[in-house]
Length: 153
Image (cartoon, rainbow, N blue to C red; front, side):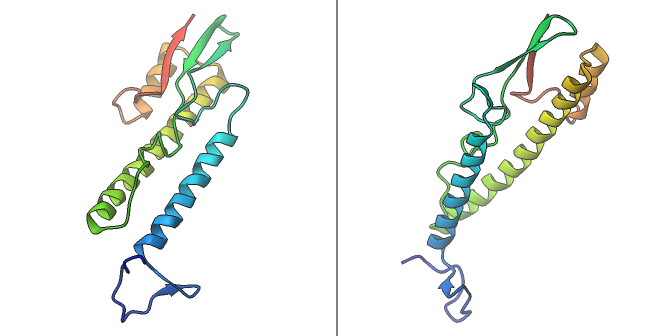
């Protein structure tokens, strides 16, 4: 039986089930499974912009007669470093909390990168000024690993 997160005197339960680390761990694993399913279902042809297992995606550009190679911005549990989380003891639960917070920040950054890339592709705007703007929008630190990999013309 799972260890309760609260004193037995608090009588905290959800739908008659006592809150425990085991119950929370099980719920997290189900949530992660749903996240991975959503990512898997976002595949288009042989590419997936948000899967850690997808190869780089090549987009042909008509404006320059070239192509873009884009590394996926992984939003699955593997790409967000959420595999192997445990809440079964206090030390593991604290580590899990830090990793979940880091994953949320990484996901927000990756979504922002994808939105910026989408705007650039929709506008067919890959001038040096547009690429400079793309990098400056990403906290001035340049493109994060896995963003727009290169432009081949």
